[in-house]
Image (cartoon, rainbow, N blue to C red; front, side):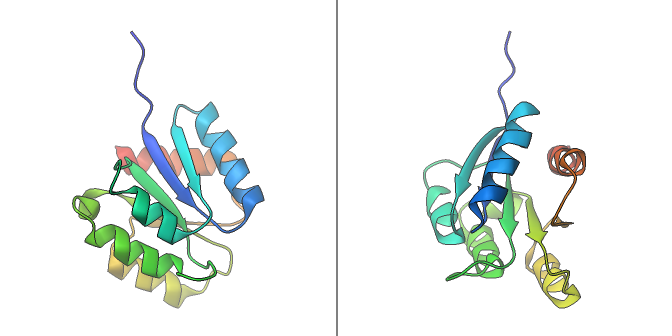
Length: 124
């Protein structure tokens, strides 16, 4: 009997980061759908809700914080854990993300094992 892989949505404007995350998470039992920006991710949530979301804080156009607000406003979105990805380490953005409803954050660059552990932790 096969186990259904948890669906993870990932938005980041860096294609290399998206590829890396998709490879790492897929090898560790997740189904991964990647998006080049938060707007596309939020729009996709109307079609199929993920088990969790990984969202870059800084993206051109709609910021990760704005996308996080959009996720939390979608039907059922309040219950979907969101892990923020950040490379700048600005405490104010991290605090703001947590206030909006993020479940946590991971600093870029990240260790693959750390990312996998954090994503499984979101689903526990």
